[in-house]
Each structure stands twice: as C-alpha cells, then as structure tokens.
Image (tube, rainbow, N blue to C red; front, side, top):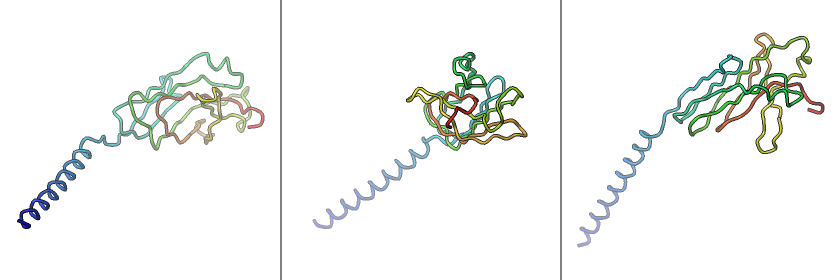
Length: 156
C-alpha cells in the first residue's frame, strides 16, 4: 500500500515537471522576438531607430505652426509615435538641423521635448555633430513624444 502512494506521488511530480516544461516552451514560442525598427519623417529631418518586441511601428509627423507659439523654438515640431503596444528600447533619435547665420551660436542650440506632466518644453541631453548638422539622442519610450530644436533659454 505504501508503495502505491509513493508511485502516485512520483507520477504527480513527473506530470508537474512536464507541465512546467510545456508551459515554458509555449511561452518562448509565443513571445515576440525583438524587431529592429527604423522610421523617417517625410522630409527626412527626423530619424528614429530602435528595438521593440511589439508588432507596432513608428510614425513621425511634422506639426506645422507650433514653433511660432513658443518663442525659443527654431524648428518645426515633430511628433514621434509608437503605433501599437510596446516600448522602443536601445533606440536613437537623429534630428537634422541646418544652422544658419541668423540662428544662435552652436552651443546655444539644443533639442527639446515636450513634458506632458509639466506641460512645458524641456531640454534633452544630446550630441550635435557639426559635420552632419545632426542632433543624436539615445531614446527609450512608449506612446508618443514631441521634439523640436530651440535656442537655449537663460539659466539652462
């Protein structure tokens, strides 16, 4: 009698281990593989690339006229949206901005993003490549964000 109970316990243990292995295998099969995404704005000014596990895509739209209502913005505003669920990871944003003579000095031109919580434009730490006239920013986000080039406000 004790031998039968021992065999039943072993049978259940083996069944549980097999169920765990099947569940883990199914999870790995169903889970999306990382996918490289690259997107450009229509005018090729903004480029975003990164990795996502969702089946979504990136959409970049130029929003004309907003820069006129914010005195220190020097470029049109671009909305970058991740369409679908997920997050862009290990991403990079490139924003081409041709510095003209009437613009501020190079060290006074920075990239801004709009903060939805404070409802204010905030500077982004970025690198400006003088040879390509391009801002480069590491990027991780979900949802959408607004970006634009502007002159450095006093005290920043």
